[in-house]
Length: 419
Image 1 (cartoon, rainbow, N blue to C red):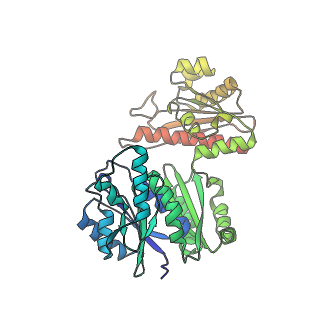
Image 2: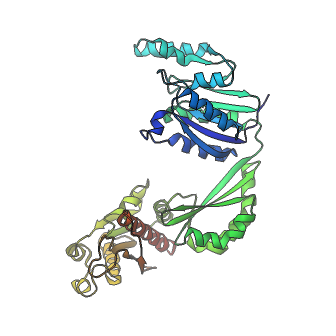
């Protein structure tokens, strides 16, 4: 009987996950893929390599989901007991799966290694299950469907899990599914989550298809607009009224759709416009340049980054006037403006951006911690923004530097869009 997978729980198995020895990237990958399939995920769990606790976790998971996807515990060692425990949970015997056994034998013959009994156990599968081939490892996965429940068993190593999920699990999850979820991710900078939500609260509360959900990032907000549709091409029409309202209320803060982050948006926009940018940094110490060069293709649009931490280097490399530094200080509107113009002149770039400020932990030149100036200079747009980034925890310095670099990237975007 075909089972419709509507709600899934991700159950990752491995004591090493609980101990913090391995980062659980599998759950992140599976959750994102399930969202695109229209399968709801309300819970994610992690359990160690213990049969009793695993059995209890399965019971709990199936009490609140029709589908459970496990990763890990399929190896040859004594503590890899996922398959045995799940077979027992469903009342099924483990039987030799001949194709998997033949593949194991071939693998050990080719590598010149002896296959021991614990290796052979990887070829034993729950009776009547659908076996998933593993071309990237020795542990096959499987699917058990019984009494309206679906159990998908995947290996733990991501290089094995991901292709098995894509090639084997996805077709199972699509069976009987008459809809998919299509999302657009809208990225905003310069407006807080609470302010954005206040502008759009009624839309978020009343809209059911599409749904609208906010997600806070460091100094940014993302809105995910998700439509449930039978065909992907139907999504645009369903989303259109909500997107129009969002643009009317907060379009001035939108820096990209499905772009991921500010640096990617900046590089893409510079490429589209055929422009080049350069950065002069003091308190951020090269963070603007580092973030830009994280993006593939940045070499086509980014000329250089100058880390002019001392006043002497601001003068010698950027041409900041000694009088400006003496009269206004390194952390000033005037210095930021001359730094931006200087790096643009030195590099020949279309856009020059600068950052100078006090990231702490103590006041400097009589300037408060968190006072930052971000300058931008181009033929069509030049300005200096004054920021007061207030933070007092142990991470304050890095937070100030990161947020200052985000403002610099946003200034590059603003300048590029005016060409």
